[in-house]
Length: 144
Image (cartoon, rainbow, N blue to C red; front, side, top):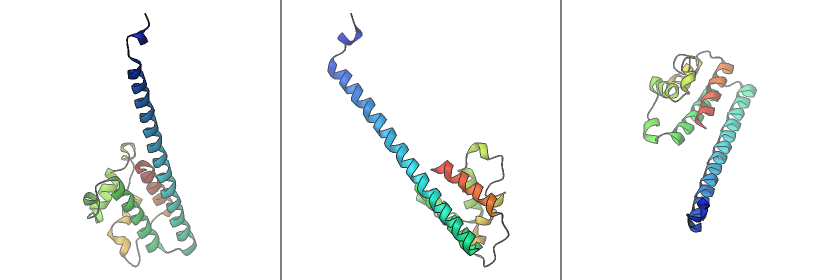
């Protein structure tokens, strides 16, 4: 006797439908995540291109900070992110990084330190744009 004869046909169709819906939901979610990452990385590239052509450090740091905040508000509760500034903001960015990246200097102790409230100064401190780009890019890939 086959096992299918003991199970009504409608149960098999229901199980197949549930599996199909689950697969479709996963596909939609992964597609949305991929499109969001592509959009954010394109925006990061545009910010970098403006910095490379204009050389405006203040604008570059402010745009990076704004991009990070937009992603953070999207991924976490707005009330948790919107009031953060200075060391609290940098601690949040470090906390939300990948755990394997925590051994490397990040936002508070590394090159990301320039993204605290000092980005609003007329002359921000010297920073390494290549290292900062790498750090921001890794954070974005972790969040999107």
